[in-house]
Amino acid sequence: MSDALINGLAGAGGGIIAQLITYPLQTVNTRQQTERDLKKEKRKVGTIEQMCQVVKQEGWERLYGGLTPSLVGTAASQGVYYYFYQIFRSKAETAALQSQKRGIGDGSVGMLSSLGVAALAGCVNVLLTNPIWVVVTRMQTHTKISKNDHSNSLATTAPEETVLPVIDPLSYGTSHVVQEVYDEAGVLGFWRGVLPTLIMVSNPSIQFMLYETMLKKLKKRRSLNKQGNNGVTALEIFLLGALAKLGATVVTYPLLVVKSRLQAKQVTTGDKRHHYKGTLDAIVKMIQYEGFARFYKGMSTKIVQSVLAAAVLFMVKEELVKGVRLLLLKDGVRATKSKSP
Image 1 (tube, rainbow, N blue to C red):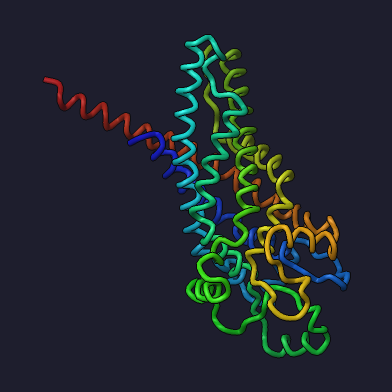
Image 2: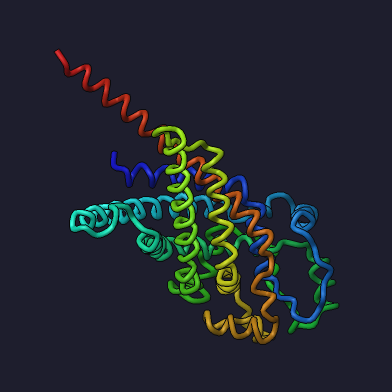
């Protein structure tokens, strides 16, 4: 089994576990990003309080709306990303060693090369899995309330002030969302928000660059202090992953808000301030009507969710990779013994 396949499968497994743990936070954060109340100044509601409101008004299941396609998307995204990352990383390491033979560099992959490798793997991942995340965003932002509440809201809110997510009393499963997206924009509708998502490739690129840089320095320091023992514990991997994700999230969060706005259900009637034709149109309208502060709406929730998810992902992935390699090593030893006379 190749290193690329091992890392791909381990990444998928770690991603699923991280997603299960942090999904309610992700649902609340997506709702915060797509909230479009332009005129009313509402009392600020904290993340925990908002989660309680969702449970009280819509039920526990709404915190896990879109979980099934999200798990599929997480497994696919992490698997694709780590698979291609390992392939590109191996090529970069080979190129670095060849450069060292020519007297250039020390034979290790530098920060710029690590950034490029992560960016290439991220672009492949985005182009292949964007349709899944369009479906997930629609399901996360779907609000289910009673007809009486809907009637009251219509009586007190002007049509132009109606905000997303759109209220739909019918069941809102994956097949319903797929049909809805297709009816609205055809096949291209499944790639809504792909431009800011491609730009957001810088997030995992920055994340992995920071992670690998910190890991490399930690191993080097451990090797110097402990005479060659450069092993890193699961807790240290957890903390390094959390720090790396924190730095990347702060830089790229505005693009995430724009992406969520584009992928959520669009308003086709009424106030055109709620309808976005594309990435640039969304950015301009958000600045014009809502201000720069909206680009960081819900960032504290996202930081908690993404840092926790990344830390769990790195920790589980590294443990899975170690476990698989150990099993393969044992199988190799057994095979060798069985062949010996």
